[in-house]
Length: 431
Ligand code: FHN
Image (tube, rainbow, N blue to C red; front, side, top):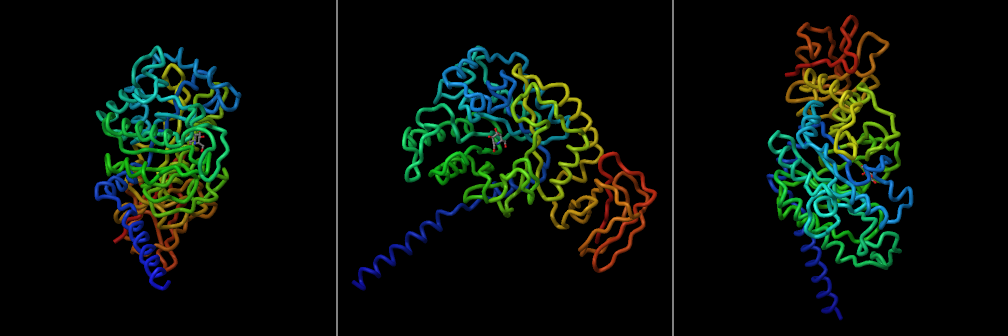
């Protein structure tokens, strides 16, 4: 009996040891890609699919209870003659964005790329017959913009996914789970091996059901195909083994106004938060709640101060064009970024907690205090500055500003300074 217990004990130890060796160790290339990703700071999120035709957001099939077989007809007349990868990439560049995350496949299950493993895709099922994801990947590579693919784990239409099926013992009672996992692996292989320069996969929809998603196999496959690819998953939970960045939806890290972030403690991975330019992800013709230049710059600055990238979403129109309201706003943001971007790109945040007047970013020995709400008092106080401050100026000027450093922090006197319309940046040089 004792012998038997010993054998079982040894077996359990071996299993544990194997599980530990199977733990994910990011490669040097992956770690470098993470750092680079953190430097980029500002990205463009794009939700575009056959749902865009209805102008009511990407959830329209579900929200309007459109039967799948009727919804599928949208593919017959999806013909985005106005799509230009060049225009999308120029839109991002002009706005000061450094990467694009685009919906390769959303919850409706329609593939916006030329896949061989499902006929329900833009090349085979629409009169357009072209692959916009390939054009975009090539254009991004040419223009030095990084590309991430959004990929939905949830599928409203496929029989093997069996949307709506009860989950029994971690598996959908209907459908064919192995077949669905295999299908996703085949598509992800296509996205990583066929499309040039892909830097990340942005999963979403896993929150729909509590099943075994085979993340170990899926993430393992991605990293086997290209170890540097960054994997992120919008599961609204703390990061899981095999993930390379942590994302937040419609909330700055640490906030939970949406209710999505309640279970996602901030981990150690690079952070990203996404938000919409109006109130919709996919094109919504009635949504005119456009965010102002000031709101967008503040979101970006507040994310950077909390050490997160900002991924700002637009939903292009069904013809592939971007509506002028977005272009106009982002051109102004871009002009501001040209002047002030050095205080954001390549910086890190979170060394100093957000203050009532704004946030602090830093790079090497320079700190940038971003004042987004001018204080009533004639100074700002930056707590817990350990390094000795040698010089304080406005980011856009060379004139020295008065300051006083104490063990508790630094007072910078702001009376008489020329405030910026969006964010007055004060530069502190330390030793
Ligand atoms: O359901 C999706 C939604 O359509 C959109 O893609 C956003 C983007 O973060 N994510 C999901 C909701 O969490």
